[in-house]
Image (cartoon, rainbow, N blue to C red; front, side, top):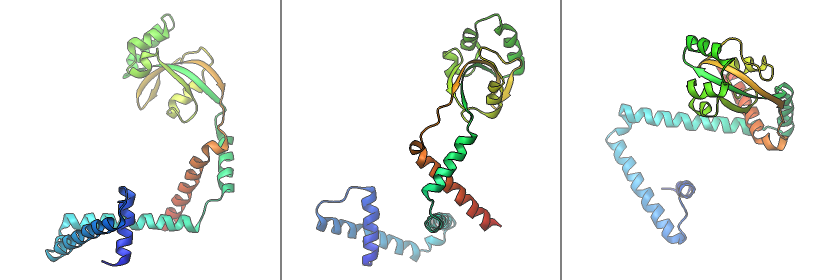
Length: 223
């Protein structure tokens, strides 16, 4: 057990549990742990347990994970992301962000036949009451189908595109199909979307830029 081994193990140990106040005691405890671990590893190799298929592939996967993360760390170290890049990406996202927020209600059912039947009743009945009675979306159904305020990206594209076509107080003329089922949608209101300040979302945008850099690097490796 080398000094470097000890230092690295201690650092890793202290990251997972509180350091022992008495440093001499800590050294004794850590050394005992390391001796035990070393003997167990030696014993495993002696009995060729590292060549057991299950163990072999566990080691292989862990090695791959460690090396993959090391590659990403080195790449980001060699290609740092500047604040200017992050701000440019923020401005780009703001430019393409939908400028309105919508407040809508919906009644979700499993089949088109059910949706068609409800659509015939919804113009003479109370929409909220029908939502409470018929919608399989239990959460919004309890609120009369109310989905609250939302912007593009919060809803699946088919649903959002249908909402955008509606005028205030209007109900979809046909049921809208999504991966969740069939929706009858009513638009309650719209308002301008308030874009968050750059500093509020700076960290998120930086992660977005970082992921794009990594995706491009991987694309180059595949090529």
